[in-house]
Amino acid sequence: MKPNFFLKKRSKNLLFLLLVPLELMAQLGDPQGPYFATGIRIGDVSQNEAVIWTRLTQNPTRVSDAPLPIALYTDPETGAKHTRKTREDKNGVVYFPEGYNINTIEGAVPGAAGLVKIKYKSAESKEWQSTTWQAVSLEANFSRKFILSDLKPGLTYELLVEARPVEASKVSAQLKGKFKTPPDEKSSRKIIFAASTCQGYPDRDHPQGFKIYPFLEGLDLDFFVHAGDIVYYDNLAKNKGMAHYHWDRMFSLPTNKSFHAQVTSYFEKDDHDAWFNDSYRGIETSFMGEFTFDQGLEVFRQEMPIKDKTYRTFRWGKDLQIWLVEGRDYRSPNTQPDGPEKTIWGKEQMEWFKSTVTASDATFKLLISPTPIIGPDRSTKKDNHSNQGFSYEGEQIREFMASQSNMYVICGDRHWQYVSKHPKYGIVEFSIGPNSRDHAGGWKQNDLRPEHLYLNVVGGTMTVTIDPQKKGSITVIHYDVDGNPLNEFVAYAASKRGEP
Image (cartoon, rainbow, N blue to C red; front, side, top):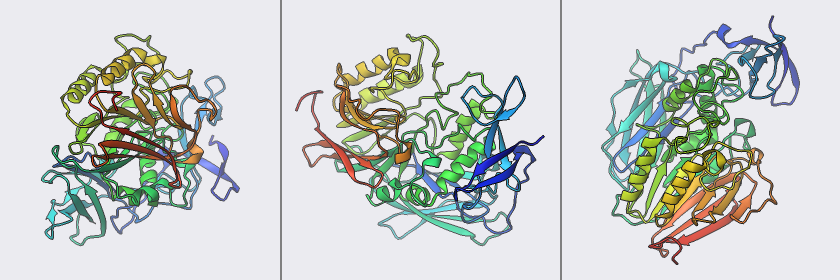
């Protein structure tokens, strides 16, 4: 028997829709194209390399005026279907409204076979370089990654990405882009970057996506970091196909597509874009249906412009180095008793972090973590370094960071903005906050702790400016979703922590 449910469309009118399981849906085709409806992603850019991700699509734009599917679960005692109650729900399955499928629901961007080529040059050059034509990978959601490996530091590069069908020579679509390479380690100049986290599709605040992206696009950033929870699988990603759909609908939003074609980006993942809330390998659950933890890790790598490991470090001139860490791949179960054997990072990543930080002579060192290191966090949480669940490893990280000069933490995951200073070690952590107002929450506005230098339960974004001309300073500004500054933190480089 097929379950009947009411779904709500954007018009807020209730429509009675017959829902059909995903496996009964046929794929649609289009004789024209291919196109670039999901844009490009420019990532893991170093002084000499950049990873360019792109994907071919059947249509030039996303599906806009259509209903969404729904996930239903099965009561193990009665066999009855029901909508989500808790994360203990069983046998999650996605159902589509009658007459719709994965290629025609809201936000759908069906992929297409074809060939892609990238032309690129520095902004000051007149001569284009070019890759060869490469086929997209159907197994990787019709995407292709290119590694541009002959770049020069400290330059702006222009891109022209082209598509054509497999059996034709005529170009079917073009997309322009640009990005910056980091200055070399001896160059001392002003660097400005932005950070974002917790991007919930239902909480969009702009007719074409999210307000923060047009604002950030106007800042001429050197680079951008998304600190995880780029998409939220929990409600609808009950199989691998629907997981890819989450990336398609997010990056085909016009605000997102435009921004990511114009900026060097670094991406991290957290629980919601790995599998589901507070997830780790080994959980026995059917809440996510056919979609597994390992598939979640695979999809992330397929969708992201990442070259090798998901923990990595990048130097941006003489005065800045960033560390991007991995918090899901090597994690112990959250339920394991805390102690020396319990870990979020794993032994190899911890050793890499300490050795590379120690070896760095950058003026400012920034750990960008998908989850908090300092906090404070809610007492009910047990899955990050700022609370009791992983306090042993958290203390190791904090003690090590305290031995470094001018080292700070930027964290994602928390749905509120804050600047906090650890009472024992003096380490300052900046929580970015979610990228839309409706996604903010999880903390009370009046719950100001002694650690807080700034607290605001609000959505928005954050910029970091390293300026050697201003006494060797770091300036961190939190903004609301409209680009209005909410708080400014300024500090100056010191030979030892705490010195003026």
